Amino acid sequence: MKAVRIHQYGSLEQVALEEIATPRIAADEVLVRLEAASVNPLDLKLISGHMQAYFPLTLPYTAGTDLAGTVVEAGALASPWQPGDRVFARLEPGPGEGPEFSRGGAFAGLVAVPAKHLAAAPKSLELTSAAGLPTAAGTAWQALFEIAQLTAGQSVLIHAGAGGVGSFAVQLAKRAGARVFATASAGNAALVRKLGADEVIDHRTDQFEERVGDLDLVLDTIGGEVQLRSYQVLKKGGQLVTLTMPPDQELASQHGVTARWFGHTSSAARLALLAGLCDEGALRVVIDSTHPLTDIRAALERSASGRARGKILLTDT
Ligand SMILES: NC(=O)c1ccc[n+]([C@@H]2O[C@H](COP(=O)([O-])OP(=O)(O)OC[C@H]3O[C@@H](n4cnc5c(N)ncnc54)[C@H](OP(=O)(O)O)[C@@H]3O)[C@@H](O)[C@H]2O)c1
Image (cartoon, rainbow, N blue to C red; front, side):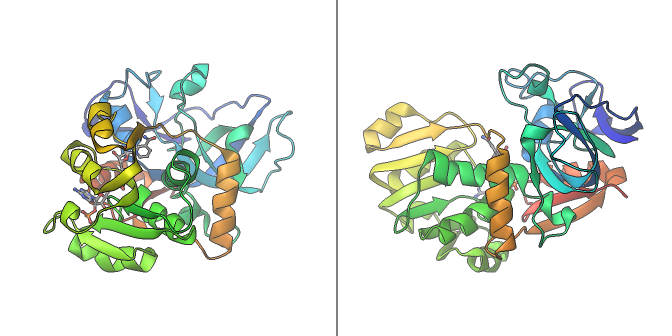
């Protein structure tokens, strides 16, 4: 089968589509025929080696954490899943899970998925779109509702409202009854408003701290000076939740707010809730672009541009 692999950490030049053996599944795993996968910035960070202190890879490494497809075979302990089931999943590169720590493997024709990470794909979506959900929508959900416990009537600023995480976070926060502010470039403002933002701030021309204040929550998807400037738009007791870098606790206490970084953890239960929202028409997947696996470098370079508008998808064609 085809698989996108690296043999060493480094540039995107060395990422190659290779023929490798079909993975053998363990008793608690399911073999899934890939319909589509999606690219996340994490894939680039793993390939470059920038994350090796947190996620040391076993090389050669088959890239990719997010996928959707159909079940080909279920292990003896995964028998509730049946051949033909439409599924989606996020392969967990989570700490403390042994070989799963650097698992990856989604950018391949066939993927061995632990049953505990598998969920039924939304019925109303093509599998190609469902592949855009796992990490980005899962992270948005985890940040807003499991970490920040956002509730109706609160106000939130979502940085990069047009990005993978941001495009889901805007929809979910709005659905939860929050007042939603988001940053995006002018060309993406109409999209982000359509997703549910009450106000969109052009990060190229405007300083967001001059446009909003007294907020309950900032979701920081950018880091650096954007994170440093974000403290001042929070009310006392507000929260900064960041995906990018550990926040400065001294700065947080000077502003009377809490600040937390967290790492996404896979949850099939969370994926099932997201699938339900898709089927209700309350959550959509914004597609930036779709590439065949043979064009893997173009897909990764698009992600590296930092300009993706929603999700970058890969199909096994
Ligand atoms: N901690 C975790 O577990 C976790 C989980 C998921 C993601 N992440 C991290 O979170 C970050 C975002 O992930 P993602 O998947 O959403 O990335 P992404 O899809 O690549 O984000 C691209 C978007 O960023 C926007 N953007 C770029 N610079 C901006 C700025 N200065 N202000 C506002 N928007 C800006 C672009 O919009 P415009 O073109 O409109 O500017 C583009 O739409 C990445 O660093 C990723 O690694 C961490």
